Image (cartoon, rainbow, N blue to C red; front, side):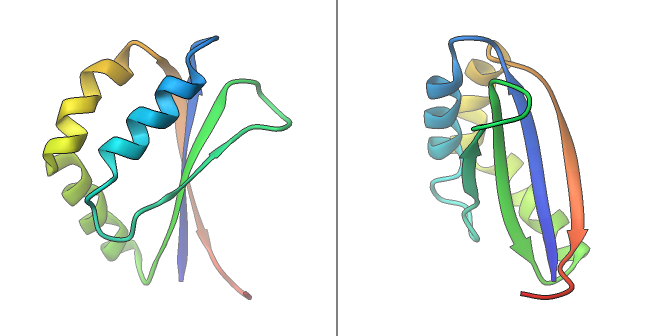
Length: 95
């Protein structure tokens, strides 16, 4: 099992808009991710987290996300709020 976390650094004052935009962008994709916001660590961090059976399944999901109309509709708006980010991939060793 693979855990994928996509971290976004959001411009000050726009975390709520970024969360709502990501909810809309992922509304109709399979394996809808959890959306997290920071309580500690770097401020204005939003994380999109989901689990997959394999890296290949994660890549298929990403392709489906980028191809979805909801994602395309929200991508331009998000570009104004997202200032950086990172991808993290983990093997889940124990639940």
